[in-house]
Structure formats: C-alpha cells, structure tokens
Length: 173
Image (tube, rainbow, N blue to C red; front, side):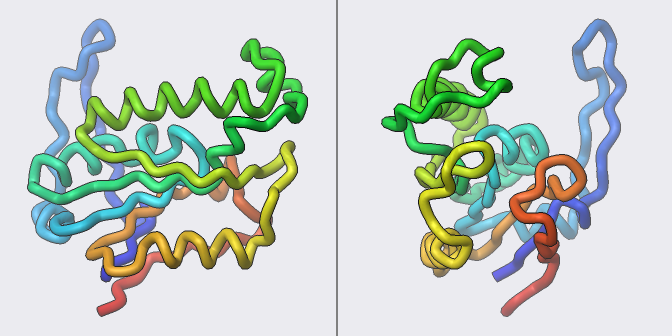
C-alpha cells in the first residue's frame, strides 16, 4: 500500500484566460504509475478531496483506478443540532440540513470525476464529535483495508483535524 499526502505532490500551475484553463497539467510519470488498482482518498471534510486532489483523482480514474472518496467528518444528516455561525450564514438551521446539502454537492462533484463517495457520520467542531479519535481512526483503518493506494489532502495549516495531526507520507509494502 502507498500512503501519499498532498504535500509531497508537485503543485501544478495552469494558465487561465477568462476563467478557462488554457494549458493542461501533465502529472509526473512516476506518480501516474502508482495510481492504479483500488485507490481511497481520505477526505477530512466534505469537498476537501475534490478541491485539493481533484486533478489527481481525475487522472487516476482515467488510468483505470477504482477510486473512492472516504469523507471522515461528513456530519450526521439526521441531526437536529443547531448550526454554528458559518452554517447559519450559509442558510442552514441544523447540522443535519448542512450535512444533507453538502452531501448532495459532494455526490455531484464525485460523479463528475467518476468516483464513489463514502461518508461517515462523524462530526467535528463545532458539532459534537459522536466518537473518540480512536474510534474514528479504527473506522478509517477498517475502511481502507486492502487498498492499493491512499491519498490524504493536507490541510494542517487551515483545517486541522486535531492540533497535532501527523502528516503521513510513506510507502508501506
């Protein structure tokens, strides 16, 4: 299994004309060869994977990989917990409303890339977590058993899962 954090990937640059990409980004050949088989992107929150690794995910699908985006903190769609300021300003009254709408958006984005979304109902700040970090990690480990490659977006600087989250970037064969 290969575990790759987006920090280790080369950031690509494109030229844009009137909001349209005019130069395609070509991935490095050695990275392309690894993105085959069963690939799971562990997304801390809804849209993290698509926004940070969308081009890589699209290329993996084009290369024949079976890609699944596993969103850890997708929140509880049936929750009646009141929203925080951010979700309230976005027009949601409850955690459940925000979760339902964001899952609809996530499913649409995943379908554009040709990947399968999988959501866990764990909640993070400002909502009640509903599980210990050990339970969250055990669930993710079980869900990724037998995969060929795991990709993890790097959001340590802006959206940490925990204050001291490690950044995995290793090969484990």
